[in-house]
Image (tube, rainbow, N blue to C red; front, side, top):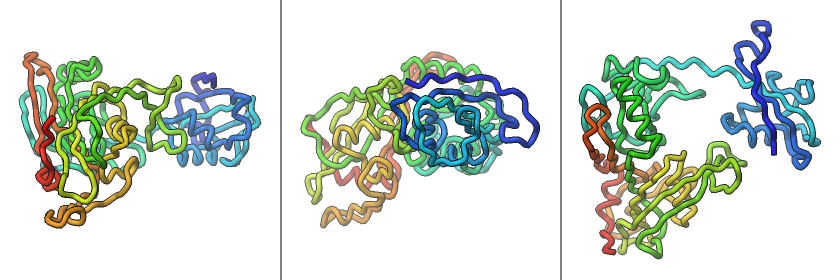
Length: 345
């Protein structure tokens, strides 16, 4: 097991690689890791940074081995070395208001509920331009939301993946932000998703109780793991619709996640043997046309993973009233829904 220590960085001269950093991470390489590449080893133990970011850190002198700056990402480790990694300072992202239309399901002085369109990023992130996100749209819609919650993600209490469409709740006051965040943290919010998947499950319903952690081989992906770094993840599901007239079995699966891990439903359904259609990370293809799967089906091109956040059940942050919000299926998923046959369990 790697023993890591996080320590304050001694002030350095401005312009040096460590200038502006607030801490370094120091850990010893286990003897069993001997022979592994430096960049690969760092990627496994610093999963909040991509492998390409870690390579740049090596080039910038932010990684030392036994006190000497590492020169090559491909260097093979012997085991037993002491590695010090100084992360670069996070970029200062200041999102600006933008006049972007939002599909509003509900709004009052405490909260805003929207149906997020597929393709919209929720908030700015390192490596991406701080524009065109949901946060930019929120700043343009609600004047006072800039002071709610965190500076770079005002009003945000939960998120959806970029290509996932559906219902989201946003806080409009700091009191609402605290209460909604608490409800999500304490798992008092009920979420329901619709996923269009390959195949047809043998059973009409089931539960997936598989822990998740970041992939060792691709830092963009998450995977089922059973080690100390994995976090519990639970998804209940039931078959919603099938496609008796198509050339290949496809199913709509109704998902009820009880935890909120990154990519949870996508990874769980893949583990079940039914990956979501057009999921570029966990699926089989990037593009499908309904017309090519059935003779009498309309042309309906799908170019994003077919996952929709359908319903959200929570308590109003001020009144405590139980509220249920539903986001209708977006236009790109409607033909795929109407082509299916409701499953009668």
